[in-house]
Image 1 (tube, rainbow, N blue to C red):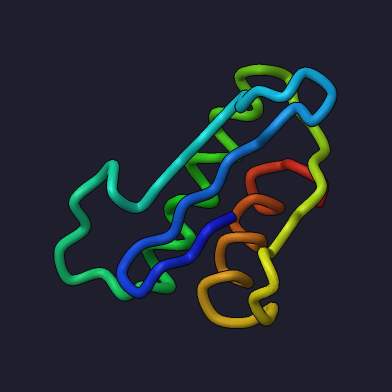
Image 2: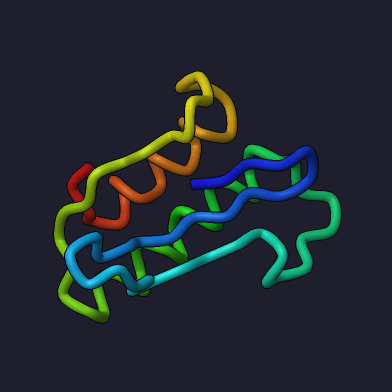
Amino acid sequence: MFRSLKHIHAQVIDDAAGRTLVAASSCEQATEGATKVQRAADVGARLAERAKELDITAVVFDRGGHRYHGRVRALADAVRAGGIAL
């Protein structure tokens, strides 16, 4: 997960192979009027949906040193709601 001032990006990486399996970003979709927390939740939902397509059921969440609240928490909760175990 990477969080900037305006956007949030998340990806599922296979550490053994060293490649990205699934990625989602708030830059992909124009969400006029949505708050940053709502955009983070959308990114989490898209990430979970794409991971389910590849039969990924569990991931390890690396919050990148950010505190677990606000956008980080919204993203993680949306991934969990999508059926991926964190």
